[in-house]
Length: 94
Image (tube, rainbow, N blue to C red; front, top):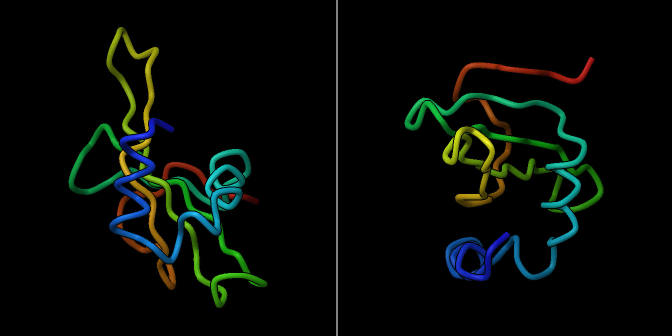
């Protein structure tokens, strides 16, 4: 995650950073589900529920895919939500 994106998340979602930085990494490494964004077709929404932390909320990490012959992906933002329902499901943990 770039410093600029980290600052964006910290400023706009202070409930997430800096305290839950490891939750962002865990969401990307082991998501509960991945959905395609309704607003940006090239963005994926990675989500994971954190039962013991964040009051059971999900962390959602929005990743832009594509660019440079589809070899580059980058984090747009991350936030918490009660339940991710937006977007078309691309993948869901069994």
